[in-house]
Image (cartoon, rainbow, N blue to C red; front, side, top):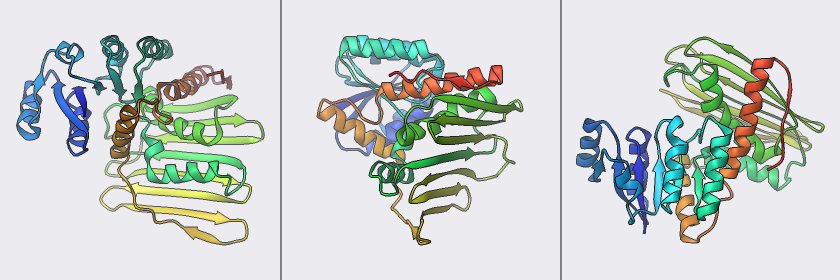
Length: 321
């Protein structure tokens, strides 16, 4: 049984629901500052709550600390949890500062505890299928990559900086799985206050990728995600709209003119993440999908994006792990 302490009552509440319906987890305690939220969680989910964060950090019963706090607090409490010999599961973004992320990594290595980062795109059903097909070379080598996400400004402030750090980064993680780290990054963006547009081109040797994130759709627009991966022997195309009416199209086009329509059973990304963490902890192994080193690679691209936006020039990226 993996015993969990959760920091945060926003998305942390959703995590608590996932743990409660997953065999092998017990949520021991949830930390928060809002007494009303804590009371509702206690009454509805029957989970003990606290306003003292150290009740979780110093609790010897707890194996895994789940961090759903504001991003600026992630590094501090991840490091505290690791020093108290607990594994850590952290929501994205892991941090806004690369040196903070590297400090978390070095602390995890020192105390020999895992840090899982919620890079959930790899557990999205269409993204996972695409990754597997690319790695199997079923369609030959990748020639170009394009992915996007689009939303109305309903998630709070999603100006250019927040757009890149909170939305754009998930596409980078997906891209790394498909093509690895890029050599050169060029970004353009428009900041519209609490909404924005970010478009990044990423260069590889004889390959090319484009990632777009829009947070300026009209109010009540659906949330849109999609990707197209063009390969030697065909292409993989996925586009979806999530709102009042959900639509999903997932197709493989082959060079011989045939078209393969995929209708997979869509799994809940977050449920799959929780099951994966359980498997890693039960078998005492690092994650090949959620490990902090993957999140740091994403942050290296993110930092290059910010430098490119500021300088309006292409930025060479450090591809060393």
